[in-house]
Structure formats: C-alpha cells, structure tokens
Image (cartoon, rainbow, N blue to C red):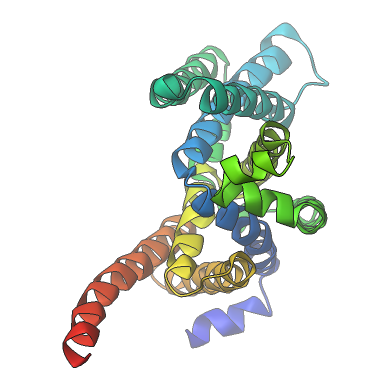
Length: 285
C-alpha cells in the first residue's frame, strides 16, 4: 500500500487511472442506480455487448475499406443506440419476447464484433482490449471525455429526475398522471447506452458492467430513496476503483479484474450479512 501511495506522485499513468476511476464512478453511480431501480441490469449488459459489434465493423471499415474518418467509438455509439431502441421497444410493446430479443442481441453483437475483428489485419488485440480494458492506459483525453459524460449525465439526471423516478418505480401510475413513459424510458436507455459506450472505450466492457450494477445494488440494500442510493453507489464505486488499483499494484494483477472482484465480494458480503442480521432482529423483537 505504501508503495502504491509513493508511486501515485511519480507515475503519470497511475495518476490518470486513479482520476478516471474516480470520475467514471459518478456516471456509473447515477446511471447504475436507475438501472438497478428499474431492474434492467440485463438490458444494460445486452447494450454493452452490442457495442463490440459496432466497434468491430467500424474498425474493419476504417482499415480495410479505407473510411479513415470512422473510429471504433462511432461504431459503438451507433450500435448502442440501435440496441437501446430495439430493446426499449420490445420491453414496452412485446414483453413476452423481451428476454429472447436481448439474448439474441447480446450474442449476435459479440459474434459480429469477433468476426470483423478476425477479418481486420493487425487490430484484433487492440479492439479486444475494449472488452477487458486496461485502466492504466487511459490518456488525458479520456479524462476529459469521461468528465464530459459526467456533466451530461448529471444535468439530464437532475432535470428529469422525477420523471425517471416515476418510470422506474411505477410506470403505470406515471402514465395515468400524463407522463410519456415510452419517451422517458427510451431516454433512460439511451443515457445508459451513452454511459456504456464512453466507458467501454476507456476502461473496458467487463468493468463497466460491474460498476453499473454492483455498487448500486449494494447501496439499494441500505438506502430507501433513489438519490441516496446514487450518492452511496458513487462512493462505493470510487472506493472499489481505488482499492482495485492499490491492491493490484504490488502483485501486478489486472486492476480491472481486481476492482470487479472487490465489488463482487462486497455485494456477496452484503447479501450474506443481511441474511444473518435479519433473523437476529426478528428473534430480538
């Protein structure tokens, strides 16, 4: 731990990794709370995996076809938005086929991405890094990108907080009160898609899914109000990211995987702890 603290002041890569982890925790905490409240973690996962297909196609067109203006981020944005619209429409209009469509998009997005990666000479490893990520390789530009995402998410999250809250907890009642549930649900999914896209290109797909779901899931066990869940989820995400970097530094473990393990361990302890504490409270009462 002391070695990690000393390295922060000397290693620019470690400084960027620490900053981007803390900054990304804000967007993950806010959007993750909506994801957990609306119980759409699997939808977020489906959108996230579809981005690989978009990135694979974009990289292929860039390198093989010669569309040099097209970057993986552009393909990821397009794929995520299309996936969000399809999943949102199915969720609202055809509930009986929702799980099937999400599974199909999840699998086909991954498959398309891998196929185009295989056909793109020399860029398989580069693109596959988006899947697992390496938070130690983030640049100053990535910091500005994630900071811009935070501002965008916070502004829309505050402006439409009450409407998102209604859509997450009681969509039918919100519809009776005149709220355009379909519009705000699709807007919420689009924000989730945007968060996933930006963070996937920075820290990797697997870490994004973990930070979107686990901190908010832990916070929801202790807080009743959504804004409280958001604040606690942000703090948990920040602590997990910092702890993941610190614990992985000495043994030279993958920081992303270490962070995920910490989040998963904290979630497991929360679940088991509540099961142990609840019976004791009942006995005392």
